[in-house]
Every structure is written in structure tokens, then in C-alpha cells.
Image 1 (tube, one colour):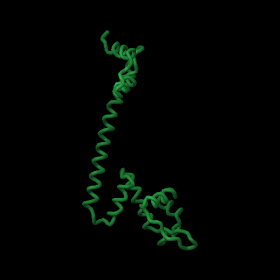
Image 2: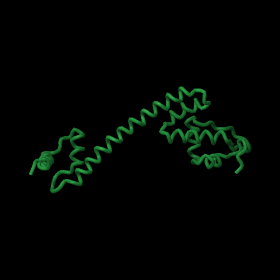
Image 3: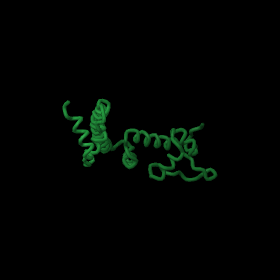
Image 4: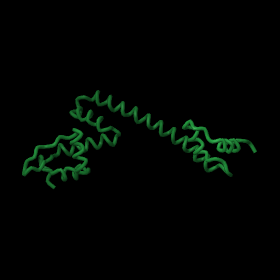
Length: 155
């Protein structure tokens, strides 16, 4: 496959950038990529800069940037706005850390509930279901409450 300046069809561009053709079209609709003029028998042609742009977008997405955030980064791609790019990255890093904290909390609670489910015996209410009912603000039914009370009572 020859990759000279602006000689790639959209299919060849997609293959070179390791994405689907529809991904290219989607990025064009979102304004992340321009649509080249139709030349050579009304076929659009793409070049190395287009491959680099698609790869830039995909790399930013893998780091968790939304397409709107990617658009902001693309405006800074000349490399001279490092402070502004750093600010965007710091904001994304804070968001990622917040999500990690939420995930760690969720993991701890689910781990406790799974352990409780595996260790309960008899006709005791399911600890997971009971916990979710209470967490939603729905008090367990009186029968469920009695089963929970029996489970918690010594003896």
C-alpha cells in the first residue's frame, strides 16, 4: 500500500489507523477531522496527517478523554500550549482518581456483601438484597426484618 501524500482512500486510511471506516466518518461529523475535497474521479483522498490525527484521537480516548475534550486537545496539538494541555490533563487525572476512589469503595462494599452471602445459613434473608433495600430507603418488609433480626441475634 503506497502512503504518499493524500493518496489513501477512506478504507485505506481506516486500515492504516486501525479503525473502522465508520469511525472516520463519525470523527468527520463531530468536527475532529476535516473531509478532504473530492478529486480523482470524486473519491476523497487522505494522507499521513490524517492517519496521525486518527491515532491522536484514539490515544486520547484510551486515556479517558471524551470527544469534546479531544476536540480541545486537537486545538492545542501544535505543542506550544503545554500549560493549557497540562490543565486539561490535570482535570482528567482528578476525575480518574475520583472514579478509582468510587470503584475502591464499591469493591469493598461488594466484597463484604459477597462474604456475608456465602456465610449466612438457614432461611435468613439474603444480605445483599436486604442491604440494597435499606440503601434505597425501602425498609425491608416485616418478615424480612424479622429474619434479619434473627440472623443478628445471638444463639
